[in-house]
Length: 111
Image (tube, rainbow, N blue to C red; front, side, top):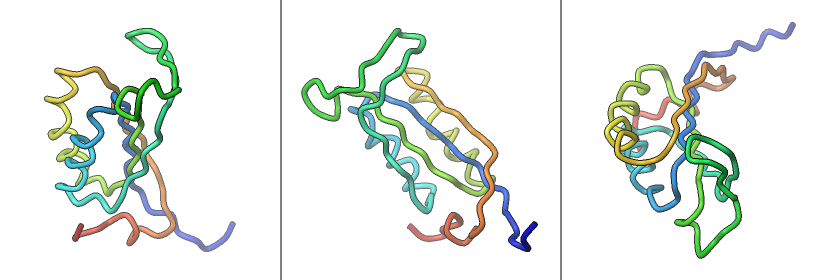
């Protein structure tokens, strides 16, 4: 095995309707997540049935997934910021253990 050290982080995936994308990214920006990736026009089946990934009119009418990787201490602020939203709107949130080679890329103190 190589001498590369992996560092523990938390991977957060949020699936929401596109019209709410800015709410989620604002939460991530406020807690100073170092970055996130947005996957547009995703398809899948869930509690509300099957969702097509194609655009109906624009990005706001399709499902989006936001993925971010953060140090564990930023997890609670993300969950606190999104819990009230997810109690009122359709969406899913997943938290997974992750490991990264370069932790400095994911531990942004500044936005």
